[in-house]
Length: 115
Image 1: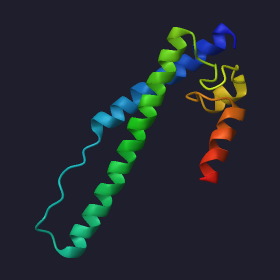
Image 2 (image 1 turned 90 degrees about the vertical axis):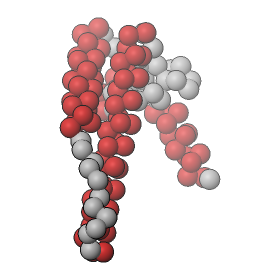
Image 3 (image 1 turned 90 degrees about the horizontal axis):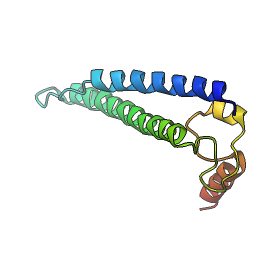
């Protein structure tokens, strides 16, 4: 991958990191009112569960982005962490936080489905 394209991907990842950090800071889960009626309490619990799931997804993506930025800085970005092969630019553009080439990702997915 050329230096210009790598710089563009880094900028995009940094913008995503900042956006996620802002969203995580703004997410307020609040407390569920235990004095609510059963139906209202169930609704509040369901909504809280959804908010927690979204927050966990944001935190996970944030960690992946921070790790990708670290790989860019240390020069290992774009190399498969399993086999060491170069990850195609098209894959990095589609999934900029990826750590595996297509073959290793497919092998990992196949191994999970066999279990």
